[in-house]
Length: 381
DNA sequence: AAAGTATCCAACCGCTCAGTC
DNA sequence: GGACTGAGCGGTTGGATACTT
Image (cartoon, rainbow, N blue to C red; front, side, top):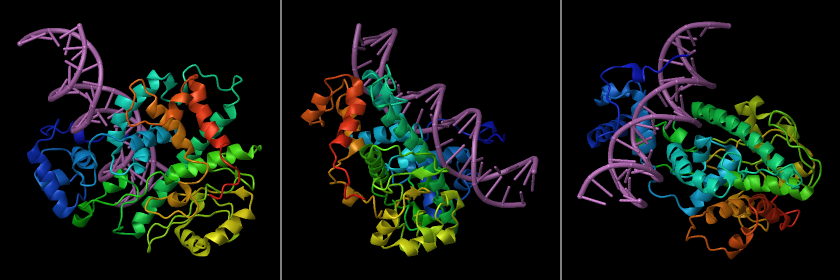
C-alpha cells in the first residue's frame, strides 16, 4: 500500500480554508484547470497538499454546486438511492444534481439516518428493526428481490464507471458532465470550470420502479441474478434493465445486449467500444428494440445508463405519469413525511393513514401496495 | 449569563483501484 | 508482473454554532 504523501509533508497547512486560499485556488483553476492535483499547490501558491486542494474544489468551490438545505424531493431521492445502493455516496450523488457526495453523506448521517432510526427502521437495511421478513410476513420475496436489485445495480455502477473512463479517453473535452461530482472534478481546462448541466434525475430510479413492477406483477419464479450471470425475466417482465442512452450527438454509449446483432449474451465488461457504437446504430429505432425485446426472454447484460441521456424505454417523461406511479417514491415519501419531526411539506393524507400500522406495513407494504395497485402490462415498456 | 450538550459540516485520513512505467 | 503514482471514495474527526438547562 502506497501511502499518500499529503499528510506526511511538514509545513503544509491543514484545517479550514481562508478566503484568500479559496481565491487563489479558484483563480488558478479557472485559468489553467487543475491538471495534476499534486503539482497544483506549488503553481497556485498554496501551502496545501494537492489532495486538500482537490477536496476543497470538489466539495466547495466548484461552480456547479448547489448549497443550502435539501428539499423534499432530494430527501426522497437520497432515501431511495440509499435503499438501493447503500453508502455509495458518489453513486448517489450522481443522481442528485449539484450535490456533492460529501454533502449527501453528511445530510444522511445528520438528518435522514436519525429520522429512520426514530421510526424504528434500520437505516442500513431499510427494514424495520425487529425484522420480521422471512417469518411469515409474506414480503420476504420482495425484500430479497430488492436486495438482488441492489447487488445488480451495484455492479451496474461499476460497469458504468468503467465506461465513463473509457469514453473520456475518446472524448477529450466532453461537452457535458455526465456523472456528477466524480467527473465534475475532472476540470482539465479553463472553460470546463463553468457550471455543467446535470442529467435529469432519477431515471435510474424509474428504471428500478419498472423492475419492481415487473417482478411483482408477473409473480413467476423468474430469477434475478448478478450482472455477471444470466438475468432472467419473463416475457411480460420486459427489459427494464435495458436503457438506451444517447449520451450526446457525437459520443454515443448504448447497450442492448439481448439483441442478436449486438452480441447477445455478452456482459457489459465484454463490450468493446466499437461494438457499443454498432449496437446503438442498429437499435436506435425504439420500435425495433421493442420487437427485439418481445422476441427475447433471456435478457443478458446491463444497461450502463450514463448521464446526459435520452433513455428510450425508461424515459422520465414517458414514465412519470404511468399508472404504476412512483413506486419507490412512495415508500420514501412515507419515510420523509412520517418522521417524528413532521415535515410541513408533506401533504398526503394517505401517507398518514398508511402510517397507522406497524412499520413493516408502512414501509414495505406501502411499496408493495403501490405495485399491486398498478395494472399489469404497463405501457411503460 | 454561563456552562453543558447537541448538531452541523468542512476537512482530513486511510484505503482502494486504475493507469503508467 | 510488479512497483509506483494519481485520484476517488467512504468513514471519521474536530471546530463552530445552536440549543438547552
